[in-house]
Amino acid sequence: MDTPQKTVTQIETPVSKLKVENSPVFNYINSLSPITTVKSISNAQTFSSLSFTSPPPVFTTPHVASHKGSRFRSHSNSSDPSNKVVEEALPEKEPPQILNNDCLTTTTPRVTNDGACEDGETDLQKMCDDNVKRKSDTPDWETLISDSSDMLIYGSPNDSEAFRCFLQRSSDSKTRLCSGSKPALAPVSQSNEPESSDALSVLHRGVRRRCLDFEMPRNNNQTPRCVVPSIGLHLNAIAMSSKDNNVSKEYSYTGNVKVGLQSSTKTPVLPSDDIVRENETREEAAGEEGLEEAPVSLALVEVSQSSPKKKRQVSEQAGEGESSCKRCNCKKSKCLKLYCECFAAGVYCIEPCSCIDCFNKPIHEDTVLATRKQIESRNPLAFAPKVIRNSDSTIEVGEDASKTPASARHKRGCNCKKSNCLKKYCECYQSGVGCSINCRCEGCKNAFGRKDGSSFAGMDTEQDQENETSGKSGTTIPLPPSTPMPLRQPLAQLPISSNNMLPSQQSQQHLHGASLYNSQSFRKQDMGLMSHSRIETIAEERAEDIENFIHSPVTNINALSPNSKRVSLPHMDSTETTPWRRNGGRKLLLSSIPTFPSLTPHH
DNA sequence: GAGTTTGAAACT
DNA sequence: CAGTTTCAAACTC
Image (cartoon, rainbow, N blue to C red; front, side, top):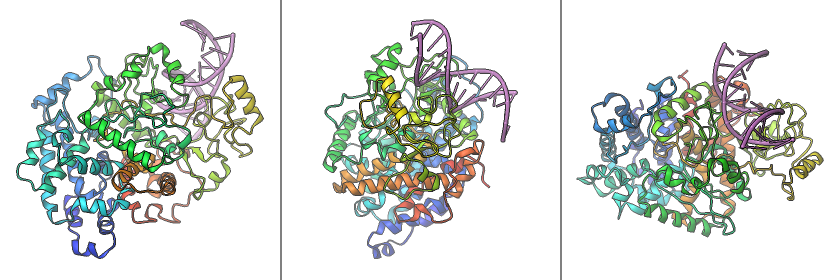
């Protein structure tokens, strides 16, 4: 468990002292650095799942509460009617045996199907309120936010989003903020809490709720896809996002998801105004949706219209590579293994999926979570982005990076033997990245960059031939038949944690693009100012963060686990600097890092 | 649409 | 950790 006391102590940083600085929040937040706050790795993970890292300490407790709530639901609170609902939702079929269910900490704000809030929620609320009270003498959040938005941008996207939602809606629609399905929470905080406290409570709830967010393609020429900018953006997509600018403008559609903190794969390239507008639109849409959880079925209306058999066709039509609508065709894995694209992408299977005996559905949430947990225990990075994109403008993380023509690399590298890395069998190729020394491929001819770094995308004759034969070339950009970048945009986000992301995903998300863009959105919208260059810079920094994170000493510990192979890149000099501390803001980013580490026992 | 190929994931 | 099996996507016909 986290250490509430410690949290409190940190929170009580003298306000006066903070004001001495230009950005009070800067110091303030620094004082709340999760690095020092989070002691329990395992819990860190749980907490991170709520993505309430922004003022970490402040929201830590709620996480705990949330955690408890989950436990109540699944273990101790059997008498709670709401639990019955959940239990009733359990599969008729016997779900696959899952290990460690106890470790499964679904921090997802639990809202039973019938809309009833669970007892856990009540407790959570209490705890939140308590925290609010304790924090009454701390700087006003709204002020802090506005004063230090610059700082917040580095924080959890969720945080930012949460604050944004909070600031924008707390005044007029608490009920909306509070998922319509959990109105019971409102009274708790509204009772006697001061405005700020109340608002904060609302904020907490907002974070826990799922907001529908239909992000429409900003490109008018593009056909809207079933998509969704979700918090649950697949990490791959996230990782890639920093550079997806022109590769994909995908808007995934988060079915079950969308937390009030949506993240979007917004492209940094977009003009600020556009971004702002888009966010506004999205915000409105979300608001009109009551910011409520969107059932997967609803979320995928568009997608679901296509028959399973058309899966591939639709997917391709949807914009190659912009496989916004991930659908699987699993027959034996029950969609509970990484074989399943949906599962691997961190999204629920949806109607259009052709899977058989699928357990990757909301009603099997527990099973899904447990399975994921299990998989992560085996490989902490199992759900991490497979491709890590480095910004051209940023310092290459290492030698290996420099040897890789592409600006991104596959985290683990491929192991192709016969495809020559020229087909989508190759994950590197599929992801549109070149092979690197991490790859063990044979006869690599990856058009995006061979393992030996001898060729680059599209420049390769063989690639040209490949393209010709596939009839998919025609562009100077050597994209794989199916634009790989947005490999796995989540459609229906797993309802994990407040933002429907599994702990690891969530934390990772903070490290990646999603976080970035979310933050950007936040800033854009609230500040209305941010130069394009700045955005890109941040994107780049995010990319670096990914690398740094993966290579950080702490990460390596886990990275080495089961799959130690190539989780860490050889060149990374983790001791050289503390990347995430290059600037004050980075600290916030770090707050979400504990995720991976948390997957393994303390050491 | 069925069958084959491929390589990641899972298993031993 | 290496070898083998399983699996589902990618691909071919």
